[in-house]
Length: 441
Image 1 (cartoon, rainbow, N blue to C red):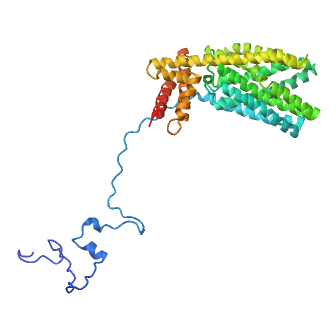
Image 2 (cartoon, helix red, strand yellow):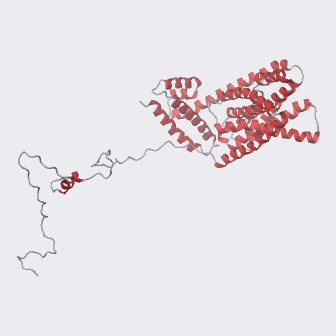
Image 3 (cartoon, rainbow, N blue to C red):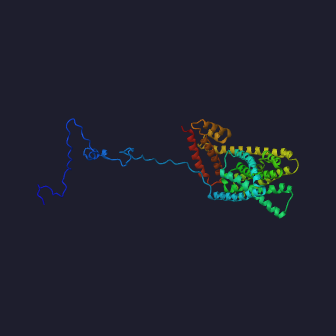
């Protein structure tokens, strides 16, 4: 042990502050002062700690950052727009199975045309048949513009008519020929063809009703799907007729066939099958099940068969052009007037259902007139085009959601849609958000 005044042992560190490093000798007055090195300056007790930090990156271009504040805390995220109700998965699976079936039939149909008609004549027939298909499709889409149908179902309807209805009709004709032998052409054209073709076309509309029942809300939807199936059927049948005319009679006969089928009567098959679709659409409006709808479909099918037989009979017997102007033209005009009446009824129903929401404060009376009438929609789109950034796309979305909302309310009133309540709330939120985006500055 050491005495009280003795120095501490050599192995213990001295207490108190560490001795300072001696400063370098001062140069004479007026002489240039030496510069401290970075190590000397960092070791100096007079250097603040903030200035002794060295950047942790070697790049000479990087900027040192001595203070990095944390990012501000984000507020709670606002709820996004709710999703619309999703149909049952079984319906989508059935639709994909149907497309697979159509793909198989398409290969068989292509083989039939190539083997029996030849690739050249079939290609020419395909190009010419595409012209009336486009005409009919554009007209049908004009009818469907008020409440557009899902694109996948539209494609399925056209594909069913062009592939399944034609392929199954040809297969049935082959079976009947093998069993009964050759029949008179008049019997085949006036009796067998209308019965078989309208049956298989009607099956396509019924499948759309079964797979996507919520997409057929009334007679206008039924007419649209029926016309699309008929347009697809006429497309493939025209390929066959045009190719046969080219092979048998050359350009002269092909021109005559094109005038009769593509110019004078492009809407014939669409008009026939639209009757079956009209009956199924009426069944949907009356809350009829998938099985009971067959009774309504049968009534529409009988009307389609009679019109089809009348058309084929006018082409087989008597003066075609005289019967065309005396019978077919008035029937076509009657169909146009009927579609106009159905569209007006659909607009009236839309206005009535949106009026329910206006009474509850969701829409103004002016908005109901804009959303539920043709002139109102044109005025709304013209107004949206004058807004900053041309907001017609938002106005179209507003019109579409509001129209769907009216249809959903009609389904809720009839009690035939278990998803109506969820979809109603989602559409109300969507229309409010779209209105806010339209009016934003």
